[in-house]
Length: 108
Image 1 (cartoon, helix red, strand yellow):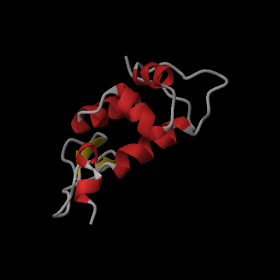
Image 2: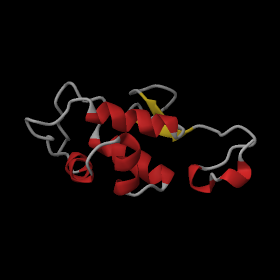
Image 3: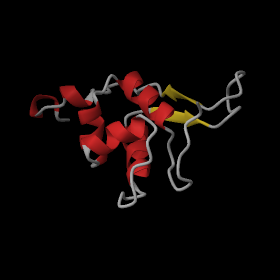
């Protein structure tokens, strides 16, 4: 069954789940980074419409948080022979320190 979304959402549930898995993030971690409720994220990832009182910017905030962490979203057919939408993880520049390893000890 294909996932259907309100037109204002900028991220599909399948790509959200895939991006979160690529980063090895829990739902709580993504929700915190994107400033969205964990319950909303779980509903969204299951393909349920977020509800009439949901902020339409929540999916956009999810996408921005994932992009900030290095996820590139691909449109259907873009840089892919498969033709469908997808994602990839950008190569990190030298000297990159993962967020979970940041501390005052490694401030530059």
